[in-house]
Length: 187
Image (tube, rainbow, N blue to C red; front, side, top):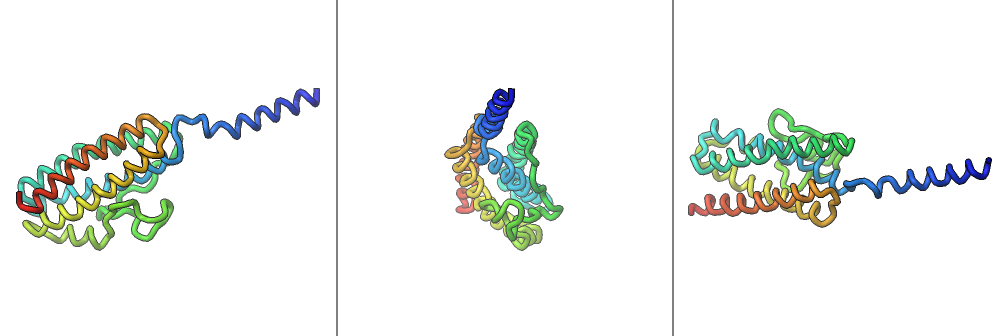
């Protein structure tokens, strides 16, 4: 009887050790979703500034598209984290800055492309053509950061939904970068 109990205990312990490998997601998926939420929140906060800061019609259209794409993606990322029983991570501060993102924090260094509080303040105080120029430059950098994050997820992620989302983000933001570069160049 003791031998059977010992074997059962060994099987249970081995099963517990193997459980993380049986998950449909991995640490790369969790990191992608956890970092992309505040990243998207900051992009949406930046986009919401466009109408009140005298942005041109083309910049307002870009800002509107960013919000239209990223607000539902935030909800989808939160849903994935909930499904995986993982915390959703930090949320946007009222100014659009990210708590803990400027000097490290729970997630370590800032996610690629995140604007600092000073950069957000510069955007918030700009208007008209100066807003357009600042917004486009910052959003290109921001989107390039998202491309870096998506590339990592595509290489290391396991969850099919997260990998598909990374591909969709990569595709959409590459197109958006090209449009914003044309707007900056005046074409």
